[in-house]
Length: 605
Image (tube, rainbow, N blue to C red; front, side, top):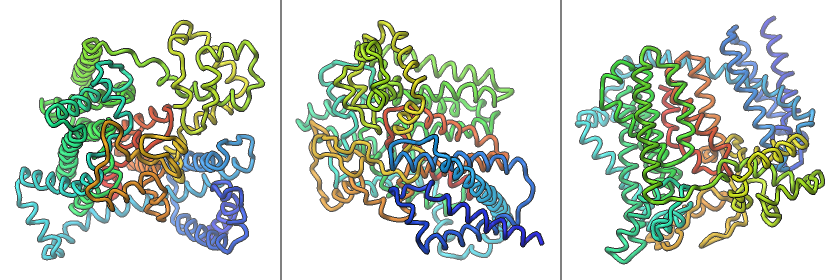
């Protein structure tokens, strides 16, 4: 009787879900793609079977059900919002059909998520029980003989071989895109060093490192390209060391050899990893330091006593944190919020942790202030922190200008000229915020905050949509990253995709030694090449990877592995800082790719 009830419920819930599915997908306004198609029958059958398989094994579990329900609701909401933003650049919050669809699919996804967690838990338990028996049976296999031979090498020899392997795999790409990807504010940072006119807009540590190496090598060789190449090679060496340490750490934590081998291949050849390993932008070093910090945090919360007993562990933690904060400003904001979380969790070690964190922050702020003073660096202004409010006012001006009084307009023009407001584009705020008058704002900030609040009270949904449009690519899996469409840069005009900058900014020039490989990376960067490959395309989607981490975070909570929540929470905080930024680009959430092996290890190890 119970099976019949479950079957009926599964069929009905799946049917309603398929009816609501057009609200959850960007079908370019044509819902007949699903409703008037045999495909809808296949969807109904597949959903029914998946729901029936999950529900017939269902057992009461309030904790797991609530956690899965919350994650399912957030996922359904983001999918529904993302579909409308992608199609119409606007979420219609009064659309009843959308909210019904969110409710229906929350129920469906909750069942699947809860069942997936349960299946993972059971699978991991079985694996832990069978590991020794399987090792005995397979000890004579080629794989195990190769592993035994590798394991017989010293840690130093393994490290040298791994670093060499990474460099060898990256070398053809380096030759193809020689002298490297000199892009994303590269010229601006270089000019600061060249002219000795510094600002705090970009982290000064990276400005000096990048500009200093290029100018120094150019003085010796007379070639800016050689300077860029040397910087790229040094960064490649640094990244190879970081990834080697990650693999070593996985070995220390007894992650299965097969997963470690896959991780090595992933770091060696996956295009996103290679792109940013060879890219001059600060994001690569920042993310590498953040990745090492996550590992150090794991050691801290997992082995509290041994961590604080070791000066090497504390020094490593401090260096990773300092570098991470020094190479992106949002790293400082994320870690400031992370501090009370760490102190709350580290009961019994709070005094020692307070001392460690205090030293890190003192060193960072003293070094930053001293460097800015020594270089006479000009403050960067407020526009970076106000990028969301600027975009909100610009959107309200574009779509609801008639609601502004003449006094409102006069006030607005004081900080954003009328000419600037014509450059509003929904997906990126750079065109407007570059005109922002920092001096006028600093002279009477309260006046402009009142204007922002006044307009927001009149048009709250406009404000919400303005923010969602610059951030939805971080949490909507089906997004094509095309935020710079139509923008002209040094060597091309952005078209269908803005996934990666690709070019070499002046004073460098591209001198490809392997044109066919150079063309392939150009295609991945500026066209939707990878979007045309089903399933694999999701590995290039920041929105999809975000939900992989969210699913893993929920699973950690479900399994009560609370110590692992700490490093994953740090990833979440970094993501929260970037959704308040000017647009969505993979470079801002590079940690999703760098830390993907760690998330995978949690789920399968």
